[in-house]
Length: 91
Length: 286
Length: 137
Image (tube, rainbow over all chains, first blue to last red; front, side):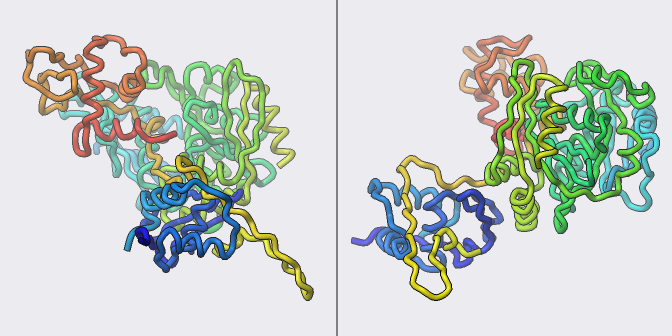
């Protein structure tokens, strides 16, 4: 069974600055600023304007990156953080 | 308000009203030589009786104005000058929208600015004032005003609030530049120091920032320097700004531009001489 | 801003250059990869303003404070009389951080006062002062 789907605004990363490998993003919808460490920005990019569940997210990221082995709960934890910050939601 | 004093500091004009003349007389003396603003002022500060009967009976001063903090404790009338100063700080902290405000001291040299920022009480205020008397031009000790479009600092040279022993460092300066000794304040014993003539004359310049330091003073601290990367700088400066969030996208652009273009370091020092030496060395290497 | 700029590509004019794909780690479950910037009024407020927290609020002056911080009738068994004066922001901070009891306050009552302060909500007297103590440095 596919898990829950997540979605980010299409322009969620439109106002952002890279510094020392971190992505500082101004989220226009909320006016909030967040500092993101990988893989958060890559997950956001995978969901920008395009809803997806965990499997789809991994597949989209995998197009550009090799994914290191990870604990099963890792992606869920990342998504929970992004959801708590208001950067992704469940459509 | 019965008594009024108008004051321009850098690009900001204040109108200070008071129920009593004494605090304003002290302000006028402290800010001798400062321009008087023309036209409408940017902020109003009111130093007024905490309750109507407190105008005469054990007078107690409430700090009010365009912006207020509802839980502020009243001060005795003897500290009315301090109340007016705190009132000006409060208007800036809560109401300034034309510049990105950073809680920092700033000094100028070679046409560029050094910012000194960090926690209250860490020594940046005293260090800014000291540098201002040792060959640098004083731009301010409490607030740095960063232009939103051009990224340049505007001077904001208010009187420096020197706490307890810090005032001793300036004992060689003319008495006329000092405000009254205020004892028993929330911060202990305080004296205000008027910035020097060079600081007052240059208060309308714009100065590009070239170095940001996080100074930390501690009697047992060995002198140390640690570079601060752009991302850490950004994070720390958001905590040093009272209006970053209110400025939304514009604040984001101004602050990211600053963090990407200006180097930063944290410095620890155990004495004034160590601090001045570290600053000189890092400025030369910027 | 192009979020894909993390990826180093081979970009030579002409010729095929193999691009090295970056490895991305999903991180530990307990890791923190998203930090939200919070307003920082407190930093300046602390140096700008000397704030106070009346315990209890003026409209309940004289009421006692139960050990859990709730406001109760004067004389209620097990409850403490209010402090003789409003607490300053510094004193509240010391109490909240389990520091030594400020001078003039009963140490047992201090815990009740702490719980009262923790229950403050927006709009209640002293809340702004309390909130400013909570902001991260």
